[in-house]
Length: 171
Image 1 (cartoon, rainbow, N blue to C red):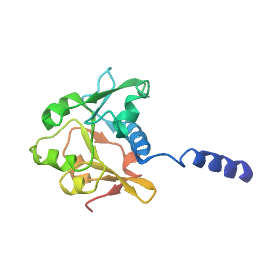
Image 2 (spheres, rainbow, N blue to C red; image 1 turned 135 degrees about the horizontal axis):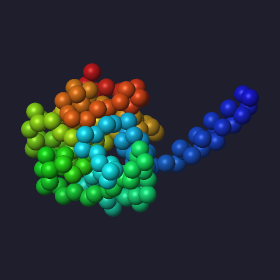
Image 3 (spheres, one colour; image 1 turned 60 degrees about the vertical axis):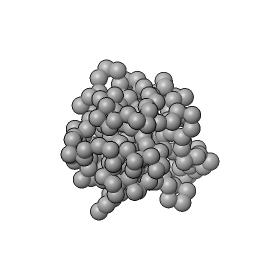
Image 4 (cartoon, rainbow, N blue to C red; image 1 turned 180 degrees about the vertical axis):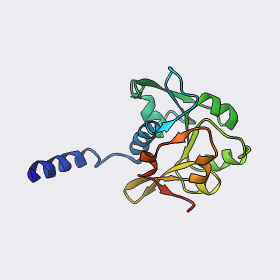
């Protein structure tokens, strides 16, 4: 019995070796959507928004449009950099911001206005500037960080199963 358990763990770990940070982030984004209840979600399914569909997590999810969450299809949308946060909130359930762009976007919206979407970036400074979640590379791993204070302000519910695997920042 122990032999089979060890063998299955080894085999499953081989699939993770060699994955790029963008592939892991796209998998995280997809899985996160399973553990968030969005008030705006309809029969159309979960809408992911990205500023770039040619590279990064947006490109990877865009190639896998047949994926489903809670039995509903996902849709991938490219948004323009000048799109306002409130407009994004009505068009997307999850929006991913690459790098430095994330902090520029956060400066442009009223943080007292509750949103219907989760905003995710790839850096911790996003959370310092009142962002909601970050998928940060630490060595060869990607870790999920969550700003609990920000998530509590908005119109969606993050389930405890997702919070159990997250680190909190700022504490």
